[in-house]
Length: 44
Image 1 (spheres, one colour):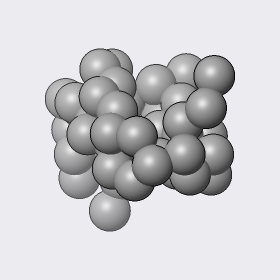
Image 2 (image 1 turned 45 degrees about the horizontal axis):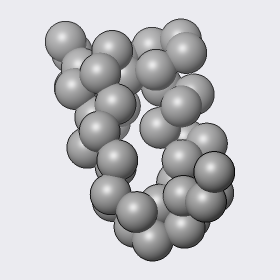
Image 3 (image 1 turned 30 degrees about the horizontal axis):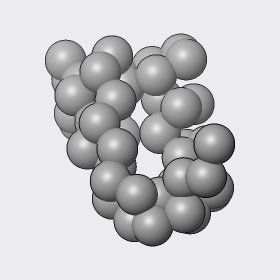
Image 4 (image 1 turned 180 degrees about the vertical axis):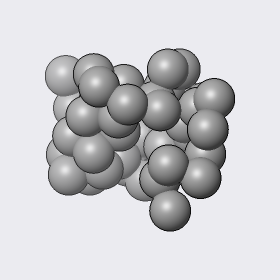
């Protein structure tokens, strides 16, 4: 699947697999990644 330039939404992005999905999507060239997380401060 070609992610380059796409906008993606990830739920459960606070830790574990969800957080890794976000990083992988950004590395694959997604233009924007919207991530739902219970504790956004963990990302800071």
